[in-house]
Length: 479
Image 1 (tube, rainbow, N blue to C red):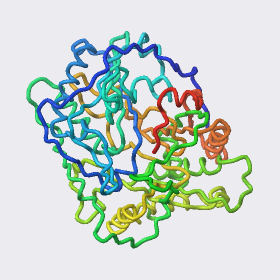
Image 2 (image 1 turned 90 degrees about the vertical axis):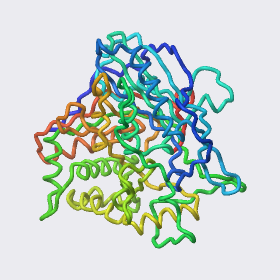
Image 3 (image 1 turned 180 degrees about the horizontal axis):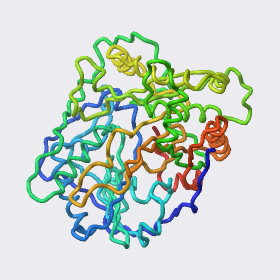
């Protein structure tokens, strides 16, 4: 029988004191230039906040960690000069670019009055963790755009000697694999002495340019063209409706995952853990949409984030640094999602990425060249299962836990691995209260209705954020 396990309410105020809020510049002078952004880069104008927690290390007190990270940042910003730049709109082309002007990245040092033990379960979707990866700098830095650099790194110490490294990164700069490589390089430069980079990044994003002339060879229902006011220039910004949300982490153990795979089994078909978990999440989200489930014509579209590096011809260089991702879509009527065999739904989800070939991806890029569009779907699932942020080795060791921080997006679910390598899968879900109630009910009923003995847990207690709090905390950045 599936269980919903709740812990104590999340601690929403970590009693943070900000000790430093500054800009870090490249260690050496870099070339002033305009940095090309692909059409895919330009549709991802929103921030991804993440946080990694580290146990206390007597050889590396938080002050030394801050010093090492600041110097490491200065070093990596020499080759990663675009991260220290600022976004600008090219008035001639209407395209967003990065002005590599060495304006700097944000660097924040802070401390909390609590120990990690007092904060509790680090897997908790804790609103307080937003204080560990701030989106703006607190000092009055002129000009104004310097107060909101696209990349901010924060080191926060706890009274037990443990500390957190938070990053608030505009997605335009890096996708998941690029961010992992950046973290590896940052860690490598935090060691004493002159160490080589862990990964030699490939920066030329023109490999993802549109063709001339553009050739749209497919229909692309996974994108839509928004109505923009006359005279609007630059890529569109897709904002979210502001509403109160609840946040929960739904944890699937290896026993639960094996049960899902067994339910999804088809002759001579390999079922991945991600596809099994993502299908259940999509089904629960679609059926939680509204009070009235009798709308037989309502269609739910599921978006699955797909890496393009090996799908293009020729393949992109493995260390390609940029957004080499697209969304594969699966659509179905909600009444069918409720009635169809789970194995059939998993088959649909598993087959959708196969559609994203080299020609399909090029067609999307060309469509975005003609139409300033945005992703279009009810729910997007982004997998961090193979990114390996928890495996990055700093001089003070690996993270005790690493994962996404809750934000205002209710249309994206982040799936990330368990920090203790037990094979569990965690899904961070953000929904309004009534939808969360129905989501949780469908999630648990899926297991109990089939007499499964697995123990499925939704951790921890719901936390809620109001629209006013969203504005106050600067969390209205749009996807």
